[in-house]
Amino acid sequence: MIGDELLQILGHKLGVELKLVDNTCTIEADTVLVNITYDETQEELLLSSALSDLPATDNTELLRTLLEANYLGDETQGAALCLNPDNQYLMLQKRISCTVADADALLNMLTNFVNTAELFTKILSAYQGPKSDSADKETALSSQDMDSMLIL
Image (cartoon, rainbow, N blue to C red):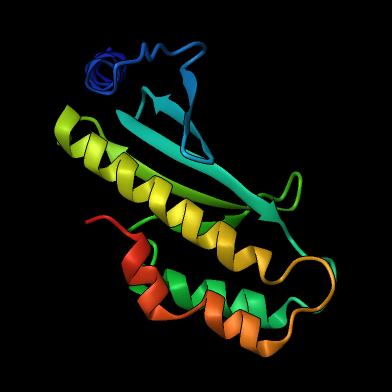
């Protein structure tokens, strides 16, 4: 199984054992839980992370921000921001082809994915709870903040 082999090599680089159970494993990096699922049919790894629940009210500005971030994948490092219809959680997901990725490339993509998840968790926290003022939202969304958090 190519996905399992790739994860074993990645785990060795990280100094942990990564083993698929029912084609899935979960790792914690910094404050982010990343589920890695191997799709045998497509020979792809799917990285996914739950970021936050969708605010019940007044989420038009948030949804616009998330859609703009998805545009061309520039602000998401090629990952997709989406809504899980089963539990209304905002998710970050990325598919990686096992046929073209090696362990070094996977480690780089995983690092970018974790940094992107941390960034959008911070952005989403500005929209949670009592209504934040626009200055807080602008601070959370600044491109300078995005640049400083992403490792390329």
